[in-house]
Image (tube, rainbow, N blue to C red; front, side, top):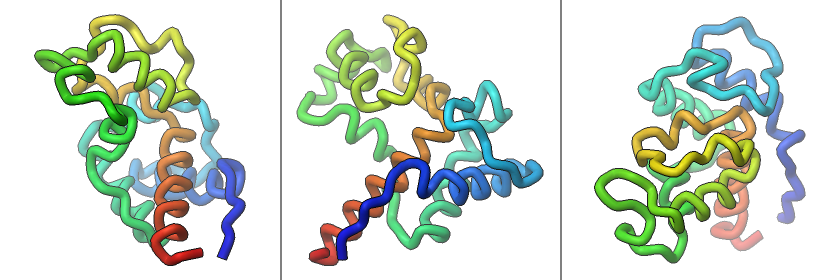
Length: 140
């Protein structure tokens, strides 16, 4: 089974899930809307959103997946030191979260601040990656 899904195909459902989790009226959210700064989410809301996305799309999204995948082949020490992203870590994160405007990746960014970068599109891409992993595991 080949899946040719893109951000546009999952965006409506992801928007609905985020609205439900945040207690907002259902609406198609802008892809660029930041969950914390624009939509008023708190970091605790991310767990609820991830759980709802897993249930809605029938996928597994491991906690910490974004940071783990962004780190890639970098060791933990190469990615961050003392809770602050290294220049190499910042560059990896910028490449991984390509939907986030480059100016939001400031030197000195703390690992704990990474969730502040997340947009609606970040969650769409997270779902798509989980769907791809699921399809690959099923042998297509």
